Image (cartoon, rainbow, N blue to C red; front, side, top):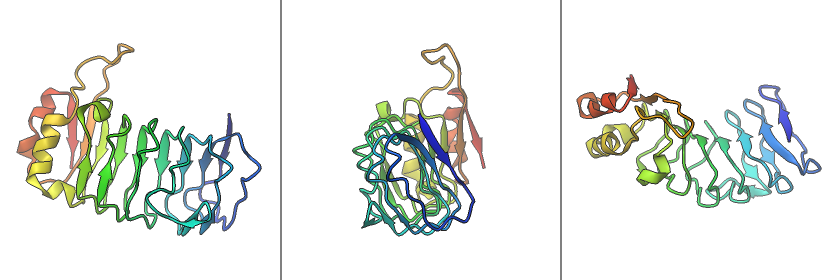
Length: 199
């Protein structure tokens, strides 16, 4: 497995077109505006947050910018100018960071998410089914429109998985929910499911 980690290096350009076997790409906090990853479809980790990327794969950033990465497990687009994101072609995705984006509608029902960070985003609606969040243990929705809607909070209370039970490896992993919701009492059942609520 090949990895390139160049976070916070003030890079303006990077050419990885010849690194076909590249598995991990971390470029967070640079000054890159155009990124071509068309030859890097084996990527399982793409970390790009906190810069001004305008085009990916020779096209303006869009909801399908990451559709060519079927092996993607980790994706960080925090504080990038995304308005939507289509994850239907990323069935292996486990860790997603959309913090600080303008994404308002997000469908995570195509994969089994373990960590979703959406703090300070415009997240309003989150679409999932019980099987897609069965492994979820880190959910960050503070300072989003999503946490202000009582129905969303009630649905989370019912849907978040029971983390008091050991997983397939015999480990018990506590869940953490980050929220500033005024409806904390609505989430009291989560305490019995081994979740901690952090304001």
